[in-house]
Image (cartoon, rainbow, N blue to C red; front, side, top):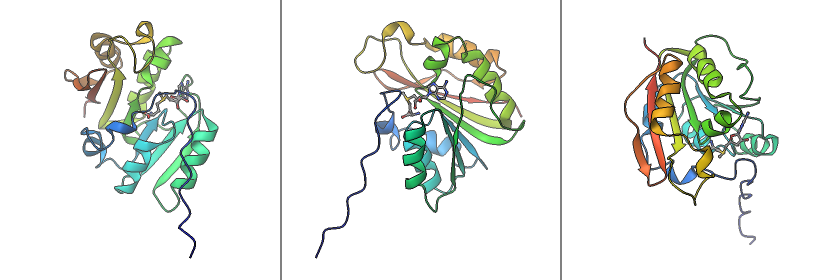
Length: 189
Ligand SMILES: C[S@@+](CC[C@H](N)C(=O)[O-])C[C@H]1O[C@@H](n2cnc3c(N)ncnc32)[C@H](O)[C@@H]1O
């Protein structure tokens, strides 16, 4: 008898860093589980998207990394998950209030590096329904490794200033590791 075929390894590629180690450990899934549609923005290979969709939450997974999206679509057959190739530095191709929740995991510093963080957060506020939740996972300003160079990391004050500037409300971040924090924000109802 042949052994069952092993699952293909997920691709590693753009972004280099993944937050897959936190999927089972932090309260992101619970915060987003009741949303009628969650945007996983900069989804990478889609660890968060798959966990949400497997729990029954509809997900729109967005990234500009085509190989990651292709792999994710193969894994997501039969799940409530769609993948969209898009540049987060441009307006989101979604209607106002279309999403009940959103996730930005290890992505905001990429947009900050090109001067687009405020624009992206304004777009997220636009597409979130009133009362919708945005979960941000970001590197803390501590020296690597792991993670990107210290110079590109955002302080908690910077993240909260960007978020409140976009009209979101939040509480102080929760450290989820020595180098990463979780920010739970919401759009006023
Ligand atoms: C560090 S990875 C994080 C992947 C995943 N969210 C996670 O937490 O494991 C950053 C992701 O953001 C995506 N990304 C960065 N800038 C982007 C942009 N301007 N438009 C779309 N995706 C972008 C990269 O392609 C990459 O998949």
